[in-house]
Picture 1 (cartoon, helix red, strand yellow):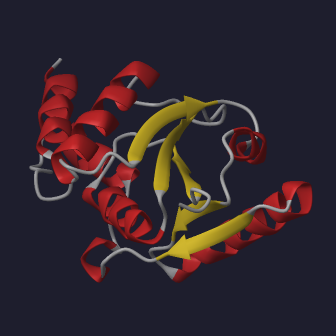
Picture 2: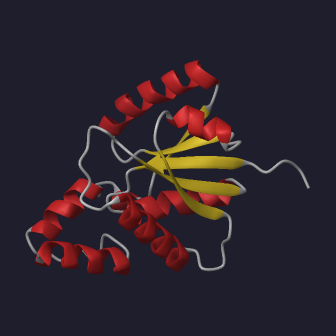
Length: 165
């Protein structure tokens, strides 16, 4: 057996959405191991704690890919390239929904490549998820709208609990 082709899919996943799961599934078809890496972003105040996001990601991934042991969940702080290199990743996965995502992601990909020669692989989710992001999901849930079509069941339940208070 050859070398394991491992990739990192970083994000705050606050919360994980069906669009994220779609990108994870696409990455899992291309690579031997996908590490879904929860980032601590100092510029954002997350709705869910790191422990809650970790649990929601693990539960969502287990439900979406029940027999798939090559998708793992972890967390990190600091520079993504350092985390990727320390875990033996050959690439970083980034989801692109709309053209406006590209400019920022392209800039980050070039910087990561400059720092550590890490490749960034851009994956587009199914077109039905192009409008979907965690911010929109949080906002809808905050105002009591049904988000069950946008997120895994465990996330929908947790959002209802969070905003019931």
